Length: 214
Image (cartoon, rainbow, N blue to C red; front, side, top):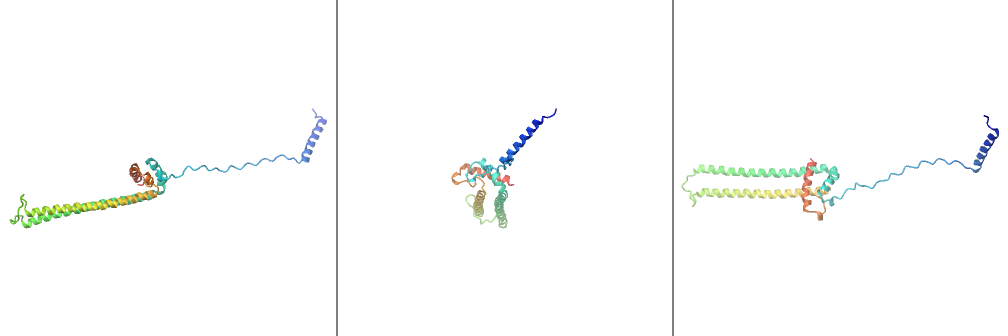
């Protein structure tokens, strides 16, 4: 079927009229809107703030803080500190054992010398005076001498123990202060927050550090 020439002409004329109107008005189709820039990254509030160790007074919280915040930075430092304190304790124990052995050697030497003297004197000299209980005056003097020597040894050991105790106590205070400087909870707690439980938990923390830093 052929198209009606009248309708075709009318359609073409209408399109031409619309184009002339668009050109006359300066109208143009809107350009596509540019893609909006990606939103700036929004920084979430920090939830990893390091807690103040001077306010931690429970062992559970102290243990968690130590594992997360202290050990990553100070494991080697703590290991050296523990090794130094352990060596001090071993040295003191070794010196005490040596002192006791020295005293025993002196005692054995005294007994040996007494035996030699008795052999030389024959232990039958009638000039020895007898005490009321039947012990010779010479033997009584030896017994008193031995008793005095034993007392001297005891006092010598006591003086050594007092000196060692003071030395170990100073070492313990120094170690505790160092742990506090490194931020180990319970060792840097504020003085007004220290309780008997905190003191007891310090010993547990030391044991944990020894195990963790081996």
